[in-house]
Amino acid sequence: MHEHNAAVYPGSYDPLTNGHIDIIERGLKIFGKIVVAVLKNPAKTYLFDLDERQEMLRSVFGGEKRIEVDHFEGLLVDYLKRRKIATVVRGLRAISDFEIEFQMALMNRKIEPRIETIFFVPSESYSFLSSKLVKEIYMLGGEVGSMVPGIVDAKLKEKFRRR
Ligand code: ADP
Image (cartoon, rainbow, N blue to C red; front, top):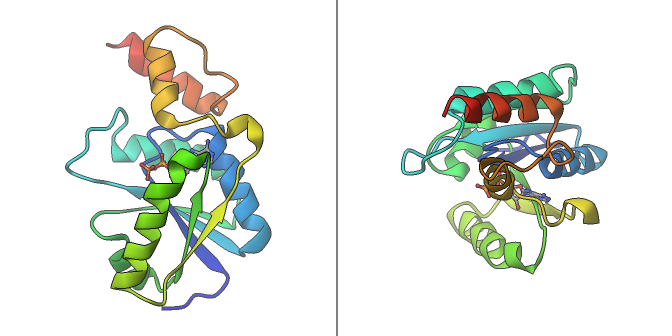
């Protein structure tokens, strides 16, 4: 382990929202590099497949040298070992995130004690925002233009038009 100054920000990103972007930007104030690691969990059904989720991230962050988009399957700790990175970034929205994030951070530490999890608190305006909510609003015909980047908005429109 130990690419100092780099952190992994793991998640589903189904799809990327402005809340994720807020966390990544805060992360870049502290870390030299953020690896946005898209999770592929075979037990989960996603609206966007792995390639689509990565593609949206790449088109938003393509020009930024300090952001890398990658993916992983299986245990996060194994991915961290492979990448030689010991720091995990996560976002904490409301109290609702706390319990599960606390549990995950401690479980990861139990498996690999060198791992530290750092939490960032998003701007208030994103503290209600989740990928799940964005999808629900979209499915019900609402507008999410202020909650996701333009490319994600366009992808959502495309996806639901085809359904
Ligand atoms: P997961 O399926 O692992 O929750 P997400 O992509 O939904 O994946 O979230 C990844 C991380 O980003 C989590 O730590 C989550 O709490 C955080 N996050 C998601 N949306 C927001 C938001 N609006 N503000 C702050 N953090 C967020």
